[in-house]
Length: 370
Image 1 (spheres, helix red, strand yellow):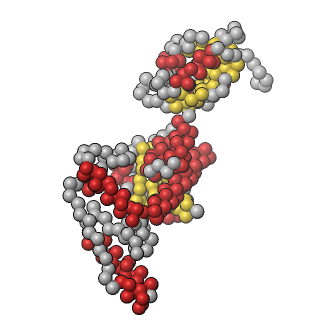
Image 2: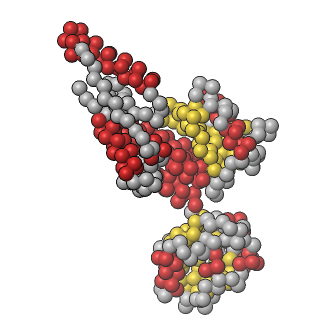
């Protein structure tokens, strides 16, 4: 069949195979028609949706401006710009979706809104991960958002991001989403992900007999300047081992964002360390010493109170007893004068090492200068 045909069965079949949910909504918000995509994307049978109000499926507290846009659409004519909503589905889930509305109130065949809906969780979570990294949020927060994105419409997987694998292939950092305890335990040791990092290439394998959830394990290396530093792991219920183009792009995108986030976190940690530590000895510097001392004395003066930044004091800070020991090195000037500054630096480094090895973990050794 060539050309447009107004056969209702053909038009319904075309719409039922659309990647979008398409519905007709009247001026009161009642859903009068919806295509079959609503069951695939949101798990709602068509028959259960017809005759219900569209507001039933929206989280009315999420974004008041988005809610107001429905009234705006009903008061206008033609296609409206897309708006994001958070849903309130019967199964307790709350996916984010993008909505386009085409107001055709005066078309006798429609007399309402033609509404187009698609899932937006994946894009929103990836955007949130980028924003998290940009504001230097804790790395695990960014990785958690990436792991959550793996459960959405493209990969449909339980996800994990792992970094800092040791020589035995055990990751130093594992952040997962939707994983059972058995899978977490397996992912904490060496496995297919170790081989993917070592070989620097994507690998897939069945999960049978491994203790991992799902039917297939997909692993994609995380690279920093073309050096593998970790792995994205997707555990899928679908046993398919061949990664198609769309899912390859999704894995590659998550790996790129993870690499950027890890590099930013390392850079931020390096800058913070440089700002709070003595470059020669590695001990805390004067600024760090006074910050720590101020926090401890403040906690002692205000038991049970909060620090200046609103956080509760640590156990060490809240301790009612403390001591400050000031050490001076006798004869150090002679070392510099007779043997040179390189020898003096070596003495300072060795003294710092010995002091650091002597104190408790809760104690602070600082070099105030000189």
